[in-house]
Image 1 (cartoon, rainbow, N blue to C red):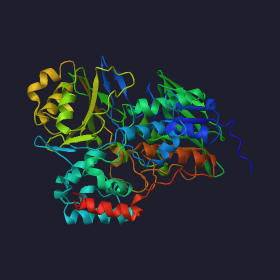
Image 2: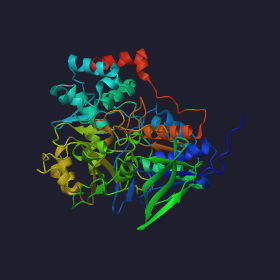
Image 3: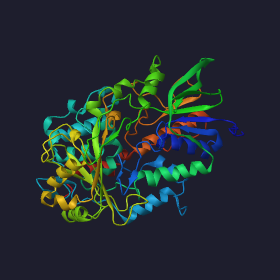
Image 4: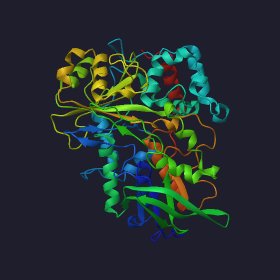
Length: 530
């Protein structure tokens, strides 16, 4: 049987995040499409979506966040097995694997309480808490419905070391969906035993924009893929033929002018729905970031437009209209001297890049920081260092600045951090030349919000011939949102199903089926590993 000829097939990918970039690569690699027939539309002037990294040493670097990576991200590593690093010496997958043999994550200070670090913290769970976790792992999602985490645990659970480590590692809140928590428990069963030291968590050599986005972008450019930046897609219109819906046109705005692209029945359209980083706002050392809404950009509006009257395309309002439950802030600090890095290294016992997340349990903001391996950016000078941090409770008054993090500028955020490090007396010298850039993200955990069946559409919605959706807001059984893996998996699924290829993405790793992982997790939950 001969393979279908796709040399004339055109593909239109809406959104410039990792899902669209991955879909373009899979269309070329596995679908035999020509790069020149693939176009990616992005409303911003920069690709990468949530995998971002920008700035310079003079004005300050900024990364809104960083996604966790681990060895069982089978789709991600399958994709990057085909993508060379920028220098062409090896594949990106090889670079990540080799780098994480050089520096293995092993925190000696995962939690800090009352100014004292806690090495390998005990989980502190009661038998009731453990039974609830075990029950959640086996209970069908249909029975859990749209209930929230706090509907299943008592208040004491949210004061345990386990919760502090879990919620800050993954950015869960008590009001988030218990189905998403269940999926995380199941998906990462094999990592529970080392969780209090962050063992098994992997990092890219540089920030994820430089290490993941740039090599993939370069590979796509070399193959002729077109990128239409500063182009906001406003609508996707459909026409019905033989009981199937086909995309007929893509409507867009560019430089204040409206345009339209005709789409043939043999062409493909893959749209990333929603955006975790939509409407993000950056502050400065002297100004707090603004809290924007869903109308600031076009991602949410597009989903609302195409889903109107089409329930099979999901319910975006469930994820857009609860900003108080989905927002938090991060901050990136560029330092011109080593005093703060030296202080944290000596306090934690970890060199930069080794320790991972450090959470200040007593912080009213529930603040956490990471000292990445340096340099964190490709062009970062040798005498400059970059750290990243974030907080989950941004509307509470700080312990040292007396105001909410949401109302704080970079200088005030640094003051709060130094207070928790017991270094307020050294603030003047540490902050000399420092640039702290805060970032407000209204929708950063919207994918965790309580939901019901149908709120997230299938990757290839039933009844649609040449249209699929990708990203964090489509439904993929067993896998977990807020990961690069989820986006790449959705891209693979979309391409394979639209092209009718006889292949599927690598199956979701199910470590919970291995009795050895269950035994290790059982011992860890009962604090029996010490």
